[in-house]
Amino acid sequence: MKTKILFALVPIILLTSFCGSKEDRKGIELTVKLSPETVTDSLFLKMDYEFKTAANFKKLGGNYSVFVHFWRVNSKEMLLQDDHVPLKDIGVWTANDTIRYSRTVFIPQFLNEFDVDFEGYEEMKLTVGLYNTKAQEKKIILFEKKINIQPASINAPEIVYDEGWNEIETDINAKDPFTRNWRWTTAKSVCIIENPKKECTLLIKGGVNKTVFQDQKLTVKINDAPLDEFIPDENYFSREYTVTPQMMGESDEFSLTFETDKVFFPDKVFPNSKDKRELGAQIFFIYFREKVK
Image 1 (cartoon, rainbow, N blue to C red):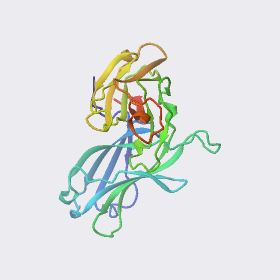
Image 2 (image 1 turned 90 degrees about the horizontal axis):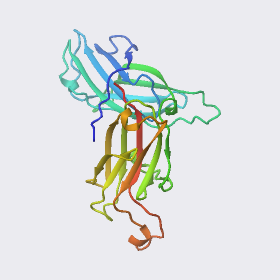
Image 3 (image 1 turned 180 degrees about the vertical axis):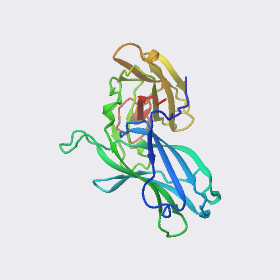
Image 4 (image 1 turned 120 degrees about the horizontal axis):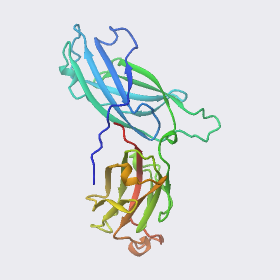
């Protein structure tokens, strides 16, 4: 059963803008709520924004957007950004106005727990504000906060690629970070996952070769029970599910299985290929974490 994932609000971190004077902020106050409370890498992070304008607020014009930057404090590198136009265009904000909306960002896996200098977390600075997209004006910084990012392993169940998988492959030039690494399945490939015994979110990003098969069918199973069965519409697919404790069972581990009704051997399909592997579907990314409520 396919389920649309909703990233809920609780638990939350309440973060309120504090930098600069009210005059610097152009009569705008910003509150940001992050969920879940423990921020790690390899995490979908929900960000709830609430902008409030004061009685003396003056319109900024229609060329402003919101910038959201996550900076690595030690290396001074930007890890990710989520610049965007808010739900209500900034050009129509008025005095005593309130603008609320939510967005979700993905914090990629970047921490190296095995580095001898790693102290268990990395300090990140989150900066949010407004900028003029058409003019070289000074940015209006509404919010700054330092956050300790911990490794996903502290609360993410371990995923082991068990039987039926080909070796991991990498394309460092891939524009989409979710497609830089992948493994090909065979006709049947199994992951063994630590059982958190709590309701979880499962997200799978994968791909099939439509030049070989137009109607290749994929089946996803939890402990041999079908979770989903589908024929991808395009080369790439993304599926989201809610996995309940009942589906995972009582054991300390459970199986996540991928099956395909068709496989191919590149050396028999492509004239210049010497690749003799059995290939089913590409699996780029498996996200399995406790569902935030």
